[in-house]
Image (cartoon, rainbow, N blue to C red; front, side, top):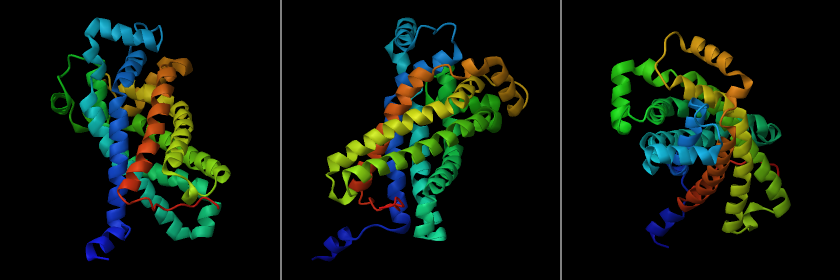
Length: 309
């Protein structure tokens, strides 16, 4: 065997391995969120203007197209793709890193007995850092969707917000609600995915004996269940995030959040839940399927696993 073949056969480790996890996560999140931009536009409009878009998801699509043209459904595509590309790298790469860190610290037996806690804590930590990267681009996306004449795209919208509102108020007013949305969402997403796929694999047989297409199907099904669960858990904070980013506002972030929650009530906090379940369930299913396939293509299929055999 040549030296080149020998190097190719060696599985990546360390920084090289986690860079592959990060790239796979960036691609799966950027592609799926970008592809579902039209659904996200409609969902955001329903949350921000419930008296206008009050006849369901299908009718809201038609209203937007009639009033602004089909191109309006792609409003915010630039910041959506860029933001979730970055977020996906930190989320998936960070999750794999922290999961392995806890396994090494606790030992395999203890880690297996406490794997649900490890899934929750690892995903929560990873999501925190992912949200630091995501928040400015998510604020830009929401401003473009809620105010179509605000700017013509990512660069223009980002620059105008920074100039008019500054770094913290302009881009991180929504950091509190984005953490409230994304951390429970990601924790639910990963723990449900891990436990559902574990249950399916217990019935289907060892992963090593299954065809690649079967594993992709398992990832799709587990991801769909995980995404639908995560959508419900994180819906109230998603509504607050849309509201608080619609305008610059006055007062502290905490006072604005409390005021908005009081104004909306329980029913108002769950506005747009239907389209969001569709969007999040679909994109999460495809995220895990794409992530698994890209990891395999990059030779990085060897993430730390603690499911009991």
